[in-house]
Length: 101
Image (cartoon, rainbow, N blue to C red):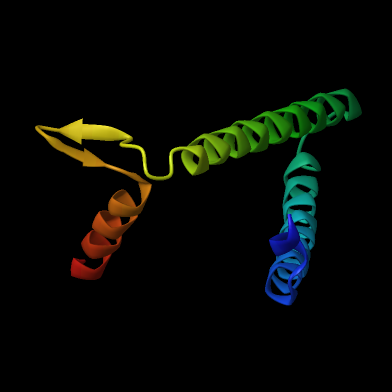
């Protein structure tokens, strides 16, 4: 628990909060421009509700997936033949593929 309050983790947290706020504001502006194209106020309210519920659900699913991936540290996520691939080996393989292209 003591590693949560190091200067590096606090700085990382502050940077992530700032990025989340900036991207959230950008997203709200974009969606409001798109929603203003709808004809009725009822359609706008329904579209806004769908946007909010979809956003909450997708972020929740992504966080659950990230939590699962972090829990798999050192465990093989999948195996091919007799070689098990953990999260770090998958990241290294994908990084190598992106460097090639």
